[in-house]
Image (tube, rainbow, N blue to C red; front, side, top):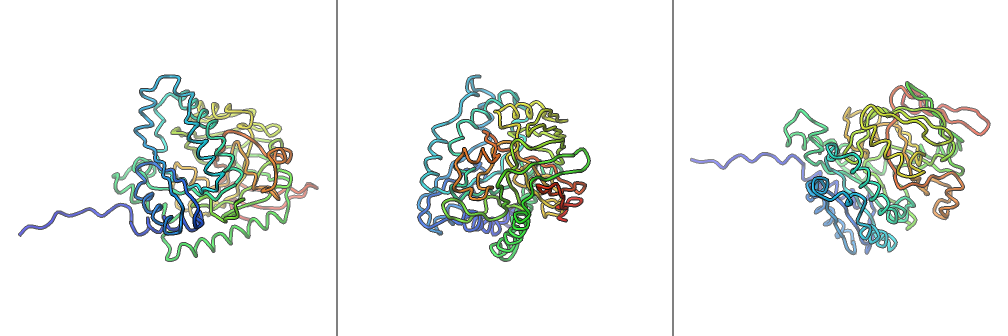
Length: 418
């Protein structure tokens, strides 16, 4: 008697993957009947893309357009393209996306690439290509940063990424572990993920309401290597969890999310701060970041790893050395308690308080939906080609809110809400 060969179990639970797709469409985007959708994703995420497309059409989507990228194709450019290639980007593509967003097309991004894909490539070429792409992407980025349409970002466990997070495991085991970590952080491992997100969004809304009622003029971060005062923009507003875009749709821009965030004043940041987690940026790991601010601008910057790339990022444009976001995340967040370093900002930023260099979000102002770019700038909002989050929080960081009269209110103590 012969027996069929054993078939190894799939490393990614198909039921949970389907629940993630449902969550992305119905909670992340809250896609509207008749609304078009653009999905960008790495090609290895096709199993998730296919489920998302199915559930988008089930929700009444007009037209779903997937745009796929491939790691080998990206590397071919760095290996074989002529030097002048790295000062160019597909502006026509980003202009088309901006045109789609102007017509109320929703936006979904799936991340999952190897976080160190470009770590072995010429850092000058990486920086040039990144800057060219940032310039070309600006028309589309403005629609996203101004929150003109509903958008969301979520993750798929790519094999190379999984091997970075779980370096001691076989590839299939690592992918399975990363998949479960993504499902847990995204709350799709629960019986009713939609209800779980409803409860989570309500908790984050309670935090934002508390902060908005206090109208702090600044936040002071204090801890090992950190003594930083972040002035807050005039008329700033705190947000977190679900937010309503200018098109009237309430969506969750990040799955997962544990943060509440607002806009700093571009000219009112003083002091020094060190990073608490590495930053994975454009295939380079930047670790041990230490910067000093004067008048809102970074005047000194160092890193124990990836310093050359960090300095090139800071020279992207005038706004790259100023802050566009400050976010509060408790050390006891589920992602922090997982003990994992994801090498991916979507997850790592939700394990710790963080700052973002570059472009601010106009929605983080009172009446932000009605403000012109000039009015946002007048209130202290920063403008830049970049928006890069990096983590500064830990269980040793205290945060005080400072009122206009100088009085202080404890906000965080040893990394937790006070």
